[in-house]
Every structure is written in structure tokens, then in C-alpha cells.
Length: 88
Image (cartoon, rainbow, N blue to C red; front, side):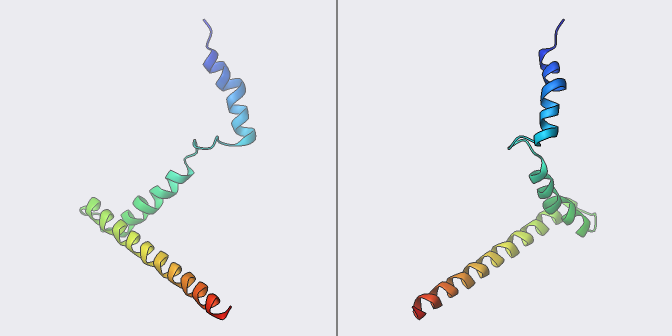
């Protein structure tokens, strides 16, 4: 009985991953950082009662703050462009 897939993993794929790193699209780093931002931190901020509701409220607040920061940065960038156009 032969196991071609097992052979491939043991002798080829594992070495390739060690040498070159994870294949694009197959890494979990993005999801781990999102889990930290959207689950771990809000959980730690909660009082551990009705956790899901508190996490959702915290995530909503984080998203609102992010939107306002993005708008502020865009507004600052727009003002810089506008003043540059007036000066030229």
C-alpha cells in the first residue's frame, strides 16, 4: 500500500514551507491579528457578564473610531492638496 500524498507532505511540501515560508493565501497571521483586535481585547475589557453583547459594543466603538480617524486623515490630506493648488 502506497501513500503518495503522505510521501509528498513528508519529503517535499514540509521542506518547501520551511525554506520559503507559507504559500500566499494559506497563512493564519491575518486571522490571528483580527481575532486579537475583535475578540481578545474586547473580552479583556468586558466584565465577563453578557460577554457577546459587550464585545459587539466594543467592536462597534472601535469601528466608529477607525472611521472617524480615516475621515480626519482624508480631510487633512484634502486640505494639503487644496492649499498646494492655491499656491501654484
